[in-house]
Image 1 (tube, rainbow, N blue to C red):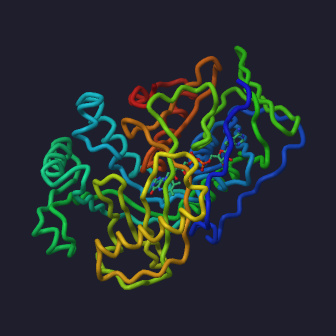
Image 2 (spheres, rainbow, N blue to C red; image 1 turned 135 degrees about the vertical axis):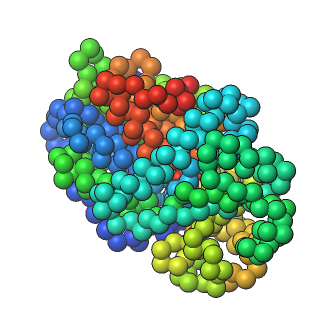
Image 3 (tube, rainbow, N blue to C red; image 1 turned 90 degrees about the vertical axis):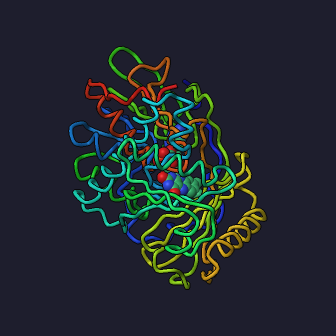
Length: 404
Ligand SMILES: Cc1cc2nc3c(=O)[nH]c(=O)nc-3n(C[C@H](O)[C@H](O)[C@H](O)COP(=O)(O)OP(=O)(O)OC[C@H]3O[C@@H](n4cnc5c(N)ncnc54)[C@H](O)[C@@H]3O)c2cc1C
C-alpha cells in the first residue's frame, strides 16, 4: 500500500474544544526505527480507545502526522448516542431483523462501556449521562416514530413515543411526535481522547508525532510501516484509525465524506431547564441537533451537505451558522443565543449508518477503523473492542456487522 491515506484540511473555524484545559499528551518526534506489538495510525478518539485497550497487554505505538487530537475529534459535538443515524425499522429493511437488532444492542452496550471506562480510568472530560429526544421531521414523521419506538421497545431498548400534546406539555416543542430514550451521554471529546492517551502512555504506550505513515507492507511475521521521517516502524499488528482520511486500497462501499457545521453559544444563555439533561435531534434531512455543554453553553449542529470540501468555505460557515441559529430559535423560541464558536468539518456517512471496522485486504495483520455517521465516538468504542479481540486471536460475535 502506498500513500497510506488521503490528506486535506479537516476543520474550518474554531471549535469549542480548542480551548479545553488538560489536552496535553506526551508525544515525541520519531528519531529512530522502532518495533512494537501494535502500531496505531491516528491519535484521535478512535486511536485513543484502541491504545487504551491494547496497552493493557501489548507494547503500543500511536503515530500521527498532526499533533495528537487535531483531526476530526476536535470538531466533534460529542453527543454520545446509541441511536444509529438510520432508524431500527429502516435498518431492519436494509440488513435484516437479526443483524439490525444486534447493531442497535451493540451500540447501546458501547455507550455503557464508554461511561464505565471513563469512570474506571477517572478521565475528567465532563461526561454526563443523558436521555435523548428524537423529533419527528421531514424524513420520518410521527407515525414512523411511533412504529420505531415499538420496534425498539420490543428488543428491550428504553424508547418511549410521545404524541404532539405530550411533547408540547413536557418540552414545549411543537412537533407531531417524538421518541424519548434513556442511555446516552455527552462530554468533551478532546479531553476524553487526551485522557485515554495519557492512561495508555502510563501503561507504556508511546505517542509519536508528527510522523506520516506512507506505506505498509506485510510479511508472515508482521507489518513494516514506512514513514516520512525515514525511520521505519515494525509491528506484529497495525490498526489504521485515520478518521475521514481513509487508507487507500481499503474498500468502503456506500461510504462517502460529507461536510457538517456546528456552533457553541456563549455560556448560560436563557434555556429551558430540561435541556441540561437531554440530547435533541430530529428526523429531518438536513437535520438539526443540540445539547448543552458542561459550562452551560448550547452546542448546535447539522446542515450537512454531500460535498467533502464544502466545510472549507469560510463564507458558507457564516451562512450555515445563521441557519442553525434560526432553526434553533424556531424550535425553542425561549432560547436566547449569542454565538461564541463556529466551525465546520469533514464527516462520514454510510448507507446503513454503520461504520467500517475491517481487516485490510492484501495487507496481513492490519485493520482499518472508519467510524462513519453521527455516532462516530460510539463506534470508536466498538472498534477498540472488535480489533483488540481479534489481535488477541479471538472472534467478536458482532464483527460481521461492520465488514464490507
Ligand atoms: C462537526 C462534527 C460533529 C460531530 N458530532 C459527533 C457527535 O455528536 N457524536 C459522535 O459520536 N460523533 C460525532 N462526530 C464524528 C466524530 O467526531 C468522529 O467519528 C471521530 O472524531 C473520529 O475520530 P477518529 O479518531 O477516528 O478520527 P480523527 O479524530 O480524525 O483522527 C484521525 C487521525 O489520523 C491521522 N492520520 C490520518 N492519516 C494518517 C497517516 N497516513 N499517517 C499518520 N497519521 C494519519 C490524522 O492526522 C488524525 O489526527 C462529529 C464530527 C464532526 C466533524
